[in-house]
Image (cartoon, rainbow, N blue to C red; front, top):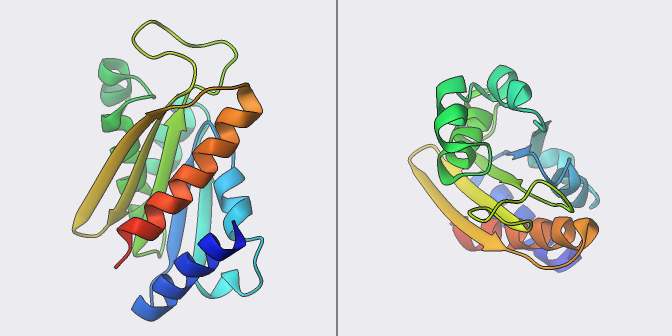
Length: 156
């Protein structure tokens, strides 16, 4: 994980960019991973832990209508989270994650382990959805690693 974070750090520094995160199901785990390396204050601006729908609305500007129509675990919600994190920070790059870590909360359409990811720059956004297996902790850890690898792959 350290090499992955160092790769992210190098790309951010090379672009003279700051990073922000918007997390739901990971509860700040991604930001914790990112800030576990020395020097992260040079490229990490802030993290938003928006576990509730109200927090997504208040902190990131995700609309109530979007959440009612698509749900918090959706491509639309994660894109709004990523864009909102950029709008409410000094960062030029963002990473957002929302999902169902379980053991409860899943449905036939969105089973436990369903996690949506978004990575955004001012002019570009990329999304992905994964369905991870395992218990709550395993799903959260897989989500953290996937989100960081996706960020490294996304950053120029």
